[in-house]
Structure formats: C-alpha cells, structure tokens
Length: 445
Ligand SMILES: *[C@@H]1O[C@H](CO)[C@@H](O)[C@H](O)[C@H]1NC(C)=O
Ligand SMILES: *[C@@H]1O[C@H](CO)[C@@H](O)[C@H](O)[C@H]1NC(C)=O
Image (cartoon, rainbow, N blue to C red):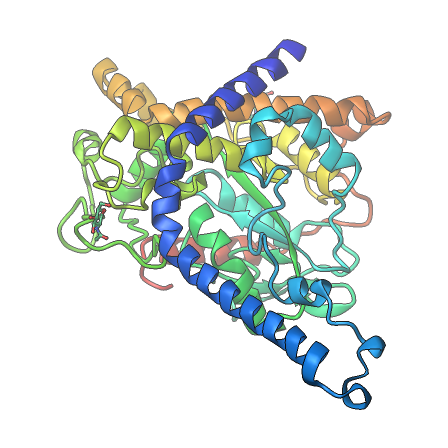
C-alpha cells in the first residue's frame, strides 16, 4: 500500500510539472482579455480610493469628517474585491498550482479529512454530483435522495419527478444533482460546466449573500465497459443531444463539435462506425468530463495544434480535479465506495449498494473480435490511465479510513443495515427509469 501511494504521488507530480511547464501560456491567452479588464477596474478603484483619502485628509473640515471615528480601511476594500476566489469550484486542497508541485497529495487528503473537512448540512455546504453517463450514476443518484439516513430526509414528489433535499433548519438545497435540483447546469454537465454554473444557479434561488462551500462527488467506471455500455445505449436511441458542452463562455459551434450521425439519433450503429467517428463524445468521456476544458481551448481543436499535448493537459487536469474531489466511487467496487462515502461525509445509507457483475457490456465484450477490443482500448487510452490512477487513489483513501476506524470489520460487514429503516417505495424505481429513458434520448429535458 505504501508503495502504491508513492507511485500515485510521483505520477501526479510529473503530470503537473508537464501541465505547468507549457499550457499556462494557453490559459493566459484565454483569460488575458478578462484579466486586463479586471486590471483596469482595479486601477480605477485605486485612483478613486487615493483621491478620496486625499480629499478627506486635506479638504474636509474636521467637524464634518471626524476621521477618528471610522478609518477607511483596506479590509473593507478587500472584502468588496476579493483577490482570489473559488466560487463554484470544489474545495481544493491546493488551489494554488505552484504549491501543488511540491505538496504531498496523500497527506493533504489526510489533513482535509481531519481538520476542515466536515460536511455541515446546517451551514452552507453543498454536495455537487457530477454524473458521467453509464457509470452507474443513476442508481447512486437515487440512493442520495432516497436512502440517506438524514435528520430531515429528502421529500420526493411524483409529479415533479424530483425530491426536495433541504437543510434541517431551512428550505435550502444541500444537494445539487439531477433528482434534487435537476439538470440546472445542463444535461450531464461536466466539471467545466458545473464549476462555472452551480454557484450562480443556487444564487438565483437563495440569493448571493452567502458563500457556499462545494463538495464535488462523482463515480468512475472501468473505461472499456463504460464505452461499450454507452455504445449499446446509443444503438438503442440515446443521444444526450441536449447536453450543452458550455465552455469558455459559450457553447461549441457545429464545426467545433460535429455530429457523428445524420437525423435524430444513431440507431443501430455498428461498433466499427461508433469507433471510427472522431467526434464521438463517448471516447475518453471520463477524462474529458473531469478536465478543466478551458485549459485546452474547449472544443476548438486549432487552439492547441498538437493533439498529444492537448491529451496530456486534459489527462493531467482530470487527475488533478479528481484528486481534489471530496469523494469519488468506482462502479466496480460498490461496497468500498459506499464505505468511503459514509466515512468521508459522516452520513449513512439505509441500504447496501448492489454490485452487478454480469452487465450488458461484459456480454458485449465477449462477442467482439480481438482487433475491435484493441481498437476500443487504444481509443480510450486516456480514460484507461485515469481509471488506473483513480483505483490507486481510491484504495489509498479506503486504507486510510479503514486504519482509523476501530469498528471497521463490523461496519464493513453490515453496510447499509440501519435499524428502523427500509421499505423503499418501489414506484420510485419505475418512475425514475422512465425519466432516464426520456432524458437520455433527449426527448424530454
Ligand atoms: C479557435 O482557435 C484559434 C486559435 O487560437 C482561433 O484563431 C479561432 O478564432 C478559434 N475559433 C473560434 C470559433 O473561436
Ligand atoms: C460479484 O463478484 C464479486 C467478486 O467476484 C462477488 O463477491 C459477488 O458475490 C458478485 N455479486 C453478484 C451479485 O454476483
């Protein structure tokens, strides 16, 4: 285990080194316009402040201004114009990329866990579920709204096909997910979309006076199974064409993100055609959905001329964002994921998570020719590397939580067995599955 954790850190650091060496210039290019605007604004503010002080100090009569009663202070100034903000972003243990290179990831997770990491439902903490297609996120999302043992359980409404997941002391959402808030930031919104949208969406309902803390969570799945599962889903008519892919302040143009098919859907597509389409969003979906796409110029392929470099930056960014998440689970390891979630958030599920072994995708896999398997693997190389990284990190977190839990054996053997709970409404399953079919084929969102 020790050896593994070292590998993780080394791998991550060298990726960051690569990420930092060149692509920062791209980032600067992207943001230079807004930065220079900001600089102008700050300059005007400074001028106003200085001339104000001069006016007050020299020209204002003492009996009017009475400087001693209230000094113009820099704290007021910086409260109004915070220099560095992390609004809408997950709690980053290392939001400063310079520190990131030198710090130790494993330790920092430990720090987070022991010190400032307490999900406080009564305060302003929000859990944001980043739901990647075909990772088992639908059942997990359902567990979140239905099966958590809460002081104030979510209340679900059949007509709205939603649940209110409110804080114990006031009607404010603590959970940002499809079954609580809905797809407020777009259908299956990715990291780039969520981090630029969640905060302002919640502001709309709850006002912008509070500063919320965001706890991002997600699930990852073995990439070949996930890809094949998405392939099957698309064959049956799913398109997710209502996804916005919002990035860098706009949605991509049709030239930047062409469709792989003509007409309404890609019904009955063959695997060979599915693999051959260069714009297929199923390819390396997990890496793309976890990366900060602004770093690679969003969907504009001419922004970064070298595809290898684009891939490298995207993968490094996805790893970094994954490591900064409060929680991620692995579809193949339901039990461990449940335990890690419960220990991390100090919350309990009233049901055990199911492990489905024989899935559609494993059946699909057994029917493929060896060259097809090889092509799918090659195509999803980024996701394979991300998943490998995720597995190591997950087991590192699991081992840490286990080591500090004196009741581990008992807890782990009885996950999801809470007394006085149970009797889930079966209608819910049916209702939400209907919902899934509608949204995934883009009919009803
Ligand atoms: C894509 O990026 C290139 C290079 O940075 C730029 O010249 C072009 O205008 C961009 N395209 C769009 C649609 O923004
Ligand atoms: C799935 O596989 C695991 C490990 O191989 C096994 O322990 C478990 O019982 C299986 N679950 C089902 C539902 O078949």
